[in-house]
Amino acid sequence: MFHAFDTEPAAHPLDRAQWMATLARAPLELLEPALGAHAQHTPHWLRPPETGLVMVQGRAGGTGERFNVGEVTVTRCALRLGEGADAVGVAYVLGRSHRQAQLAAVADALLQDPEQQALLNTQLLVPVRRHLALQRARRHARAQSSKVEFFTVAREAGVADEEEGDE
Image (cartoon, rainbow, N blue to C red; front, side, top):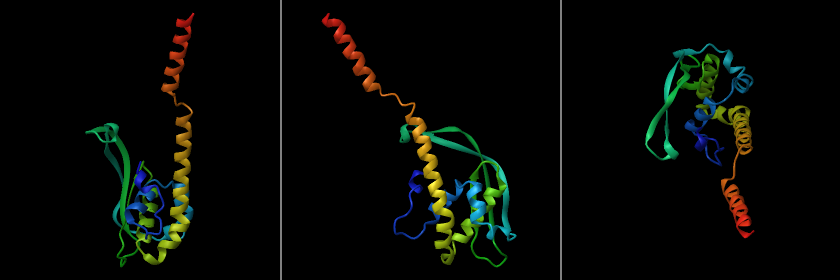
């Protein structure tokens, strides 16, 4: 996960790396309503949506040597919202959803316009961040429910051994 990008920027202008990381994980159910009017325009494709595989790497303990974890399916695209438009919208999303990649690229292109940033931040990015935080909290709660406190188990086992020795 892109934990560095999960937090909302405090009193800073929107950063493209932050909104692209957020859009890459935005579910289609949140992208469609927020971009409904903008998504109707026919984009000028620089790279139409295409699906392929990307090798994912990990690090032992987060700091060790890199190793290949495996491959994941990724869909990417690049577009302009009009022939004369300067902004190029780019998106990479996990999975095979061409529509999700297209909407994320449309949002990227729109967010490059400073006049639309505040509105799209409120209508799209804030709800997506809220959704991702809720997902993270649920995943954390599910993991915590299976957590084992080994220190407590060891301490209780040590107390039981001492009681047997006293008899």
